[in-house]
Figure 1 (cartoon, rainbow, N blue to C red):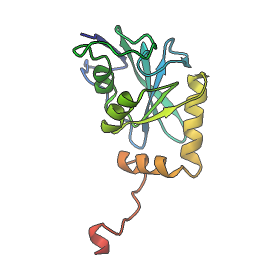
Figure 2: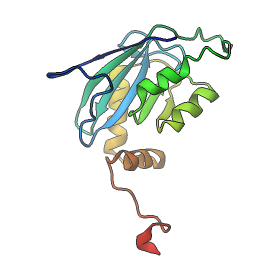
Figure 3: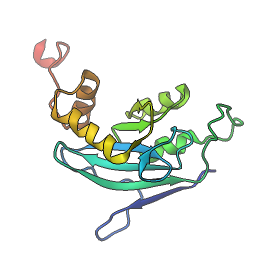
Figure 4: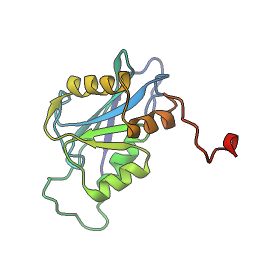
Length: 167
């Protein structure tokens, strides 16, 4: 069984789950080994730095740590030893997940939790990832990000011809 530790800023009470998202913010998880850089594969990440990102600022929401991680060998463990589901559960509520790599089965679980995985080809500082996210928010976001923003309630959803208003 994998243990999950959460470090988050709280005002007056302890929260067992992820804190509420800042209004108008995109919640971003970054796979990290050292809390300074995006430098981990999804399965082998010891920690995830979780931020709320807006066009103007970002704020650390929490750091989620895991004791049991993969060794990046590509080999799967026995049937009863699932290290991916606890990570996906811990990241629910995030909109984007930045990592160096993610396997197909893991990506499928992440996507089914409504988290959009983004593979980055080489390590970057957390600040570089957050600045890149802000740049995407400030400029014309790509279609996949517009969809994420609309589902997150950060941007208006474009009308669809299948919507009731157009029938």
